[in-house]
Length: 515
Image 1 (cartoon, rainbow, N blue to C red):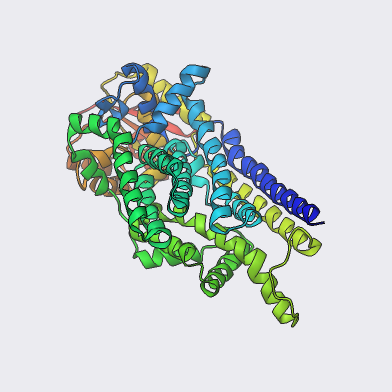
Image 2 (cartoon, rainbow, N blue to C red):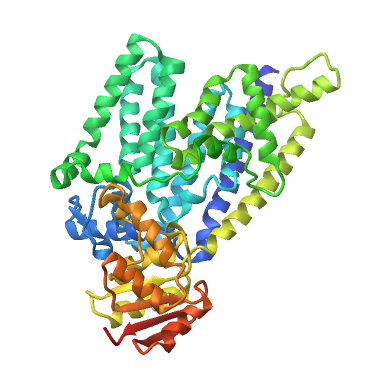
């Protein structure tokens, strides 16, 4: 009888995990399928993947992107993986950026399951946490975009690092030491912020599960091993450029609002029309406080102290576990107390039709909400008309021509037209900010602010004054008329200084005819 109950619980666990993987696959792959092009960003990464072909897999000194001599100091694991997959399977680099990020992020759902099963001491709870993570609208957005080729790998290896280090501190076996070094090293080689968050989370693990001389020595061995594993990258980068690009990148962040406010905004965010996750999240936090699940609570807060910009992506992991606790333990307990039942233990979900029905409805609702979220991502991708215009630029202009792009989008980091333009045309764009984070401390935010002003221009005088202010000249103006101010294109059309050389489906290009 015991074995039968155990098997039914195992079947229920794998069923929930299977639903998480199936629904997670659909919401992660459908946006790229509908867009027909990598979502949002990834232009600079396309150039960096192609640079590896030209260098024969040797780490280049600079990247060809936007002709700015940007140091090739970005953690390169994603670029090497993309290059390798492209060469071995003869897949175009653009298709790599379109499909590899969602595939890696889908594997992260499995990683959440394994990690949650250990931290919550229950595989059924781990499956629930994986399901809620897989279907949290907003949790996967940045990982399935073209630029997610680095972010998704960083996320995956962060999770695997936490899993290995947790076992190292708990079990103290040498195989976990080797896996901890491997996964932590791969996290550092995947993404700058992932490496920082991995180190921070490992420190948090030591505080809660280590606190012994032996665990401290293990932590030192892991740190030394990570330095060794990553040394081919940072050693080569140091030999090329010294530490300057790394210091520059550390000073490129801008967080805008206080950390406590960013944390509250994330906790109280309604990612969906029905506040399912919001309610479960708040109840889960309260339940964790009562049940003294202090590590999960600390992990929700700690990323904001380590590196606030990408902290929400990391905080989603413990929040998914707290959400699972709320659904499987807190609500059954509250309901039994309301009914004044003598048995207030958590419900056995695999036996309760009512709770399984509620869970099914919740997952269906979150699946729909995640699908709608993904559909919005489709709109933030290059359209065929944009690609046609960029092809024209590449075929009809000189390689040393410079371009001023006016799209009306005030946030350069979410403007796919501006980011992809240098990669697809192989021309220099004055309007592109990507890459400036490696060119000098503070230069990224300075140029970011200047580009925000540029995209507010409504006439030729504004664009010319902006060009003179930054000391850069251009030969062509490209206007994306669907988003820019309506009077902007007319200003260039009416000006004797400019001649229209291209006009098709919302993209207009003007060449300077007078100095």
